[in-house]
Length: 149
Image 1: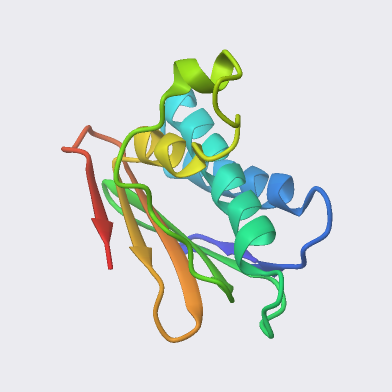
Image 2: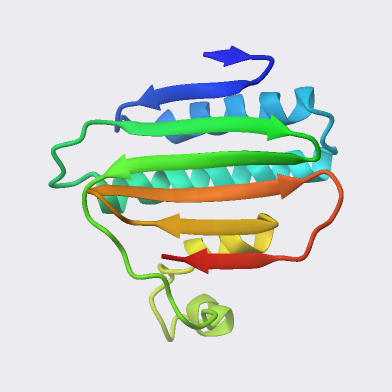
């Protein structure tokens, strides 16, 4: 559901669900006054976070679906992707993108880096059987940070 204050939706792990979540997040970002470039950043980060949730945290989980909560308190849009299940390791180092492109390393494993590059702030919370990736996007630039818990 989308309303003037935000979005709170849950979707199943069906192919294409992440695209619908990203589409809704983009529409919400546009309604909040974000630039086209920032809206594309929101799109890519939400798709990647949802894809990670569907692929890495839901298998084997008793929790069904992925929840996306979006809120906007000017000047910051916060998008929280929540799922149950398996926690993941947040990489300590930046991936070697050249090695991945050249085939010397698996092409996988750079999604969290991508999300951190696109969002102004990223928080990871993996407590109480819930995995949360909370991304913040500011209309005006703010210092980039990443928080692990």
